[in-house]
Image (tube, rainbow, N blue to C red; front, top):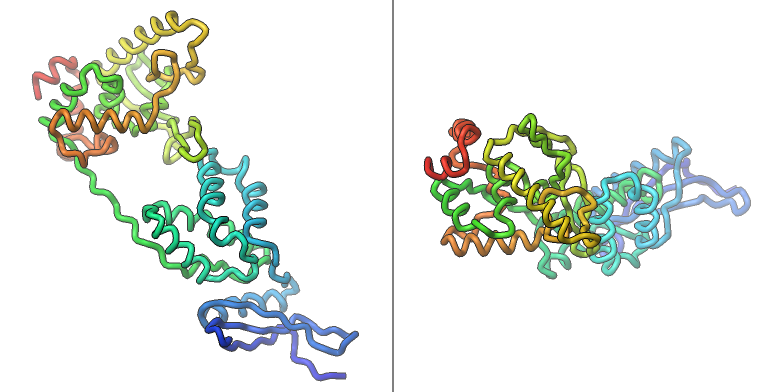
Length: 355
């Protein structure tokens, strides 16, 4: 009978192509008298050593499972169906589906799951960068792929997650530039009679995000208590081609005390909307009961709001770098509460005069 090493023993070597290979014993075949040997591969000695240790431990614990030879594209489809649909937020599922279909499958989907290594992941990162995708988008694609491969690792289909050692481009955080009182005054004067004037106003004085303002429903407005409960946002997927209502960014609703002029503005919007509904008749389409809609009751467009906002900035000779998100951060953080406290007791005309 041939002499054999103990199950779980392993060795590491560098292959001619520069890759590292770790071989280990998973058992003994009595029919042939030979050891059953398996391999794990990687780009670095350290990475392979880590994968070898995990594989040997699995052999010792009798939980070892041979690495999956199915294509990455096949596993991604299985992962999305079993671990995403119906379990994650709708918009997260939309984002993952698009990232898999547009950015992952075309480049590395044909690689076998067991052959996937850090070089493949890094190559994907570089290709996405050359396509002109932002650092944030590249990071999101990497995060989606990493989640899928981490699940494969937990199930024993692969020895380690090759996304772990990939280098990603640094995401530059955009600087927040709060508007001054003078800029706020100019912005509102220029936005007068614009279809998005009231949406911009509520973002400015209630601290709503763009999606939260566009997704605001009448059920969230309490005229008796003069409060607004923010618990949803209107989100869109350009690639998927449709909009959805989703929970807020952190998933937690918040209640805001609205200034009197904001509540009056909303009453005016409600009155105008009732008139528009009567005029539209059967064509009325405000199924979500949104506050801000077009003349047919349809939700407003996020890109269109952005276009209008940029036109208003240009007409007002304000910096083009101002973002709608910046409206959430009023003039001088130290005086924000004091300023908004005064606004709550003033009409819109009085506030403008004070500015």
